[in-house]
Length: 366
Image (tube, rainbow, N blue to C red):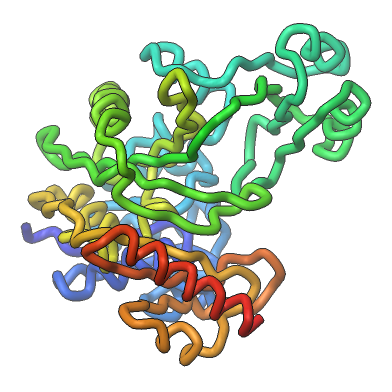
């Protein structure tokens, strides 16, 4: 356990929380990203540079024992080149797949993991055929650079679909058939050196306009947990994975349908900071450094509420018993994730009641 220096590509709130999780363990985090005023730059040394800056990443690699990232929109050629100088986890191969929605679909299919029906779109002619193939409504998604609802359009007619493609810049895309889901769930797993692995409980998520609003864990039904664990185990084994891996699912009447993967720590796992024996952030660091993984048991029931746009007065949140505030230090902006808060309670019903109290207090403060 002599390796203690971790280089992190990207300097947002996920990087910040990785650095904070590492400090009690004596782990030193260093970043390449937006600069000293970024969330991670406020808590750890940072080299201000673009995420595809070869010189900056090479310099970072020379200073650390292992390299990881907090965002998948990184340059695969540069990351692969840096991997010749220092260990990079998770492996660039799965990052490349996470960057392309078509490759992601094909990965799920290769492992017989159910996913939404889809059609590849490279031309207007492709769009004109999809309505008959998939029915309405449809979801148009740019193949690359889509997250938090970006690069997506819901269409209920061919006219709306064509207009949506124009709005996206007529980029390569996929069109998905609509999934009639009951719940949105995510599973966070972690795999360490030698193939050791652990699974957090399924988390139930609520999104608005493609942005995660809240999460509650553990999910009440253990059945989908077993299925999701098997699938994530197969994904991690295929890539000899190291680190945290998240898969988002739709729960339908027929079972789980995979939506997308995230080869990194994930917003829906923020509750683990206070709510699990070992947070996803600490376990990611343990995994990439080759340290033993920590236990992932839940301390009762946990909830997370994202703070969007701006952070209310701290007293508003801290007046709710058991509430924990995480302020990322970001400038306010409509729809921007600027912080989150978590709640814990031994009883699920009481947790849900307190979550509504917290939500109401924040809405009144806004």
